[in-house]
Image 1 (cartoon, rainbow, N blue to C red):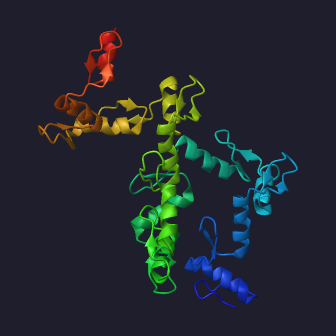
Image 2 (tube, helix red, strand yellow):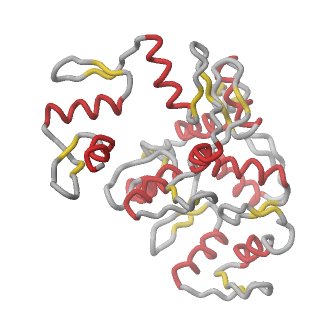
Image 3 (cartoon, rainbow, N blue to C red):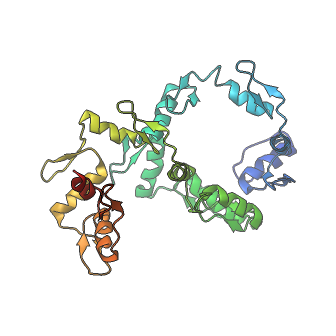
Length: 321
């Protein structure tokens, strides 16, 4: 029994049918409570237990309970074969190289640079996929129409075109669905529950939600200051004095790349941020925002002693001295 999509062979017809659903995205087994769909019946059975609240599977190491044996097996690896733990979020890995790659998601480090455009990536694998966008190499081929793609993700999104049973597409991640209801439920995972703003990546959504909740999980070990994102690594440079971003024109160094980018514009004379009211232009977006307050009369920074208002926080601090 051979798969018509990838030529993989199976002993049982039932195994082949289950496998083909990976290619077609067919999910015939629906949860009666939340309408979430699954490709395999056993996965649906395990999912239903999350609604009943029954957690019959207990971890012998820490006594934590789980609704399915699969969830318990995944959890037990934290105690047994995953010795490499992240000190930011305590997630565990089998190999030290996997932990190093994960830690970069906290620190923002992207050591693998593209030689053509300078863009950085957290792993060599992601860099290789990116390089194909420059070379034009399309190694991922559709077995139905022979269309070629640079990445596996692009091919998976393309496969939805051939499956006319999934006409509803998420505008954030291009995932397709059989029904409008399922698509709408999925889209909620991209939207902020406080302001309804949409995000393509769940990591960006989590970071945004912290602006509402005030949560700052990333702490500077030197001064204790909290941050909503892994940008704490950039903050540490204030203490260490490290300035890795150097201007090629004048040799001046900066702690953050974005500050260097703004500085470079002082040499080039570039002023891309233009005021729509008086046509004055600025080399930084923040400078334009401060300027706009002159037109609107907005002075959000108030002196605690005399209630005098200022357009910039720095001017208020100077006044209060």
